Amino acid sequence: MWLYCHFPQLLLDSLLRAQPEFEKQAVALYQVQNGQSLIEQSNQVAQQAGVSQGIASVMAIALCEDLKLKEYSVAKEERLLCGVADHLYQWAAKLVLEPPQGIYVELDSLEKLYGGLSNTAKTLHLAVKQLGVRSQLAVANNALAAKVLAEADAPLTMKDEKVGHQLKGLSIKSSGLPDKVVRDSLSAGIFSIGDLLDIPVSDIGRQLGKEALFYIQELKGELKTQRASDFYQPSERFFQHVDLVSEVSNWQGLRFPMKRLLNELESFLYQRQKVVQHIKFQLYQRDKSCSEVRVATASPSWRAQSFWSLLQLKMEQAPLSAPVLEVSLQASDFSSLSVKTSHFFHDAKDTQGLFPLIGKLQVKLGENAVYTPAVSDDPRPGINEYKQPPCRFGGFSVKPVKRPLWLNHPERVNLDEWSLSNGPERKRCGWWDSQPIERDYWIATDSKHRKGWLFYESGQWYLQGWFS
Image (cartoon, rainbow, N blue to C red; front, side, top):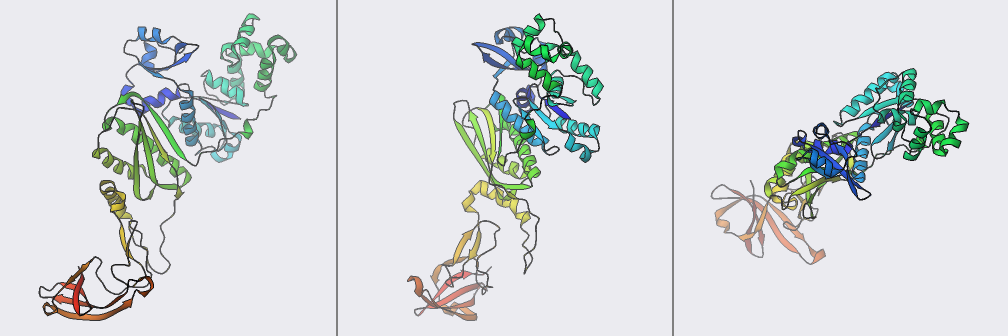
């Protein structure tokens, strides 16, 4: 058994989902064919004004003066179809794409999972409805029959008798056969698919050609197709693209489509149990330029909200340089989503609460301005300090002696103003890289009861840093 999902205006529905404020306006997509501009898709408002598929764009504008026109792109609709397949892959693994507007779903392998054919079809129907685009579904014993019924928008039924009756009642114009075969069929008095099925198979090839013969054999299930070997494999790289009905010249107008893309990324990552740290938006502008907006979280995440809060800060920093016509989102370099565990010898440091703050600081100050201080196993103060990514706790594994976290450039001091308490900590090292030191370090308190870190070198006392 096969389910066929037909999306008759996938590209247009995607446009209106990105900018829902245009749903109450007449919008249509046109395509240039043989030098003539023809309407390819139109929304309900445009259809009520008489703008239907196949009419000339000039006629469409005459029927609806405020009609908004966008050029149709097969490539863009095919890319959207892959996004639909990614969504349905959560419920069904055996999908076959029929670009640019259809997807086959093999049902036999799902019946046990969902408790029968009827429950399987209902589950997939609900999954399709979540997409928020117009869809037409049909179930049949073979893939071609399901496709023909879905494209004809026949009522969904699970009963073989009703499916056969619906199929035979369809006009030959709804068969999907080439135009020449349809014309020849009408000339021969064949007006429905039922009429075509009543003709002996031996006569079909002679009267209408091989295409009609193969069509009938596949419709009856007598001809095996290669669809079973063409099952869809989801991409391991995320890329989604949104066309805008009308150009947008401020960030406010981009909030809805960008948030929608982030939600799709969240679904993509959740389905694969992956996380990502760096994402990239591309804004395709009216002047043919393309600007990039990169967002990086302090730690890998799969939540849309984690990236959205940082993206909002990016929006506040600078206005758009030019009006935007299209937006895309890319993400790769995924890592596996793992459960938080403890270290073997000691408890893990709970840094989850710091990540949102660190991410905001990185956006405002720059990624390189926020870091975690660490020390290496070099014993020389001022040389063994280095920077590492925020909330990464590494470096020298041996427990260090007590010393200030922040060190100053050594400053000469008068020992009479200090009281030594702990020390000395002797440093005689650095011979390996020609930067030797010979110092005795002490913890001391000054007359104002401040605790500092002093060292004695070459007959002088110096202040290295302050304890908090």
